[in-house]
Amino acid sequence: MLKTARLLTCIGCSSAFAFLAGNAAFAQDVGTLNPEPLPPISHPESPKTLAKEVFGREKGPAHIEARSIGFYAKGCLAGATALPINGSTWQVMRLSRNRNWGHPKLVDFLERLASQAPKTGWTGLLVGDMSQPRGGPMLGGHASHQVGLDADIWLTPMPNRELTREEREYMMATMIVRADRTDVDQKVWTPAHVNLIKAAAEDAAVARIFVNPAIKKALCRDAGKDRAWLSKVQPWWGHDWHFHVRLNCPADSPQCEAQPPRPADDGCGKGLDKWIKDASHVSVGGNNPRPGPKMSELPPACRQVVLAP
Image 1: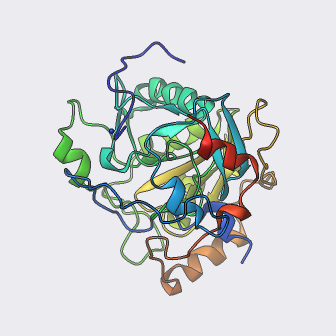
Image 2: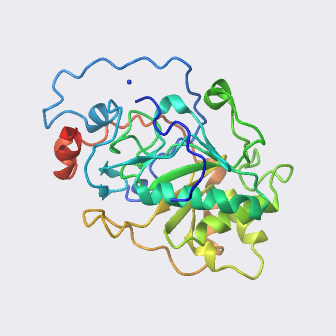
């Protein structure tokens, strides 16, 4: 990992396309300054218990060898590493959610991208949800982000000061998409947005990046002649105030289920036109109302992750 400032590495320690991005926090959710503990589960050992009820209560990582287990939307995470809440070119948001955890490769990537950010014209990263301490399904906000290889990065540059705890919980990101949902808001869209997403996409560890169709449209328009990186950028509903980075399965995680690669073309043709056409007719929302998998439906190794010290 990059040798950057490390402060408080642990927070809170006391249809087929649906799987591609999950229902990734379409609306901006605020946090809280006074998180309340959840009541205990009646039968946490039961295979019929919803996995989100178990993993959503874990406060710290499983102290075993780091590995991503299962699929991005149906798995868990062993040996997670926390992204420090402050670095010279990043700050973690919504600290009360305790979702600044990931496979060590994800933490490496975020630190690497943060170090590149100023060179792209971006002052630094505001990092949203990564994964829970042991990954797994969440009680709300995402269907994916389960194996420590997904991260949301705000499309709002980091201010040139350290944000207060209250700001991290209640500050809202800049809305990038225009009200009619067919393009970006030119009052807030800048070349630095393009440069930052391009830098992320060009990282060899990145499998794909999810953005709103209107943002993909703007990237296609503004990319210039160097367009190979656009193939990794996938339009998806929501994602209008952040972009969602997904890494490839790491070599140390044989039980990680890879996603089929994106098509090699830039994705700026008729397929994108249909996304834009449909944009005003699609209702997005929800704080993950689906029950999600039971413990018995996750990979067997996830039970070891829950039981680990």
